[in-house]
Image (cartoon, rainbow, N blue to C red; front, side, top):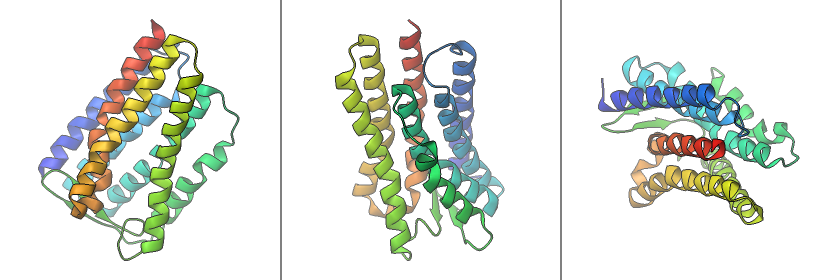
Length: 220
């Protein structure tokens, strides 16, 4: 068992507990109920890393990829629902759904390697050999995160209630803190490119904690 597996399992349990606590303690909160779903997906990805490093099956590698592929779309959906913006959820989720269908097909090859701290995955959408698909996937992933961040900042300036402003601040901090360390590591050590999802989701545990703070602020 690699060290990554132990860290991933502990992180998954922590995130599942945070999601359960939010659902039980803040079940009447006006904040969107999709936030616990986001946290569960983070935990599920960590669990797939644990399983991939212990059982080593393609199923868990593919499930992990599908799981974190939905995170940017779900993050955007959460913000759109919270702010009451009219939108078509189908357009938000169409890309990750297509990626999931392609990924789960038997013809797509997947490889994963457990490192000392992170899991490296090589597949159709994260592979230097498939430049077009890798670029398209990267644009989707960072594009949705960037759009979510932009809308958070835009709505922050429009918000009049102090409580809402605090929630937007925590939402932006959660997005930046979860993503920025992984991006910095990627810039400094380009060889970590195939390990980006693993790095990102390890730091994304901060999202769970800040989401808990946001629920507390909303309640009080």
